[in-house]
Amino acid sequence: MKELIRFLLLEDPNVRTVVFGTILLNLSASVVGTFAFLQKKSLSGDAVAHSILPGICIAFIAFQTKSLWVLLPGAFVTGWLSLYLVDLISHHSKLKQDTAIAVVLSVFFAVGIILLTYIQHSGSGAQSGLDSFLFGKAAALLEKDLLSYAIISMLVISITAFFFKEFMLISFDAVYAGSIGVPVRTLQLVLTTLTVISIVTGIQSVGVVLMSAMLITPAVAARYWTDNLKRLLLLAVLFNTFAAIIGSYISYRYPSMPTGPWIVLVISMFAFASILFAPKKGIVYSMYRVFKHKSLILKENILKALYQLGEQENRFQDTHALSNLLAKRNLPLWQVYPALYRLRFEGYLQHTGEGWALTNEGIERGKRIVRLHRLWEMYLSKNLLLPSDHVHDDAETIEHILTPELESRLEKSLNFPEVDPHEKKIPR
Image (cartoon, helix red, strand yellow):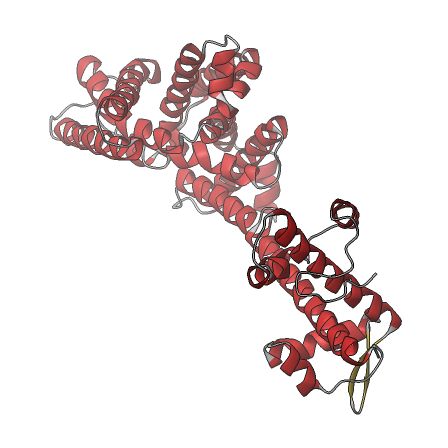
């Protein structure tokens, strides 16, 4: 606890530098990464991240310095060149964009590794620590780097804010944006340039291998929580900021642990948690919704079957044995039992020693499902001219989702029919 408080108070200058440095890097990465994700260009970040390594090595060989402002132009040129080649290959060949990205990424990264190996064996006195660009080394950040990161982050965020509406348009519907006069190609070049700048800036902290994860993963996590672009950007920034703080703390608490990979690991945990548990879009919620819908269909099919059994003698409150219900409706016994007791709990059924009977509420609900089924069969037969033996399956599906409003309009459009295509009475 004492170490945590000391970390949060930022008493250690090195901790202060690492925390502020990673937060500044993550700010610009989150913003441009969100737009790249929305444009379905997530792999482009991966291509750029791997392609800037030869640019860094060439800049180092030429100037023999590890200054960020010297290495940045080299990284920027090869990063931009990789995106140009991906665009060129995917538009002028039969290869798809993901294939073009894989080819360009592999070639540039291989050249980068060859150049890095050459530098390490060249005997240059300044080459020590250059390999940190491969996997990142946030602990190596210096206070003078913070100013550089702040300038770059503010530049990226300011340009994004200035073109926010245009970026939003080309991200969601580039064709429409072009049709109303928005310079789509130019804005895409601006956005691509900002993406390259953000990636190039972050490599010292996270490295070329993991930078693409920091770019895209926060946007993936945020997308599960909102459809609003401003909230999406805010959430992506927050996720990345929390990941930067937690990753920095783990590295501070356990010095042998690298900061960059921990930041990526934490943000990935946010993403997995969002994919699983986010309301409305998470996997768990989707499974619950499917279960709930299947449960509703099962319960309504049981009520319908009991109502149809009552139709035979026009005695709807009679008790029916479970075997009669299963004979009427072929349902799995292991599913029927819990559904019967849920219907009893909800007041639609009552249970006696002889079997199951509809309550007044159960009769009304069962009658409505039967009515919807026969009305829809009538609609298919009358309006789509389907034979009577081809309408049952469709009616089985649609009867569970028709609203009272649609039910009323359906009845009216059919002129309130008395019987269905099988000459069975439509209950009212």
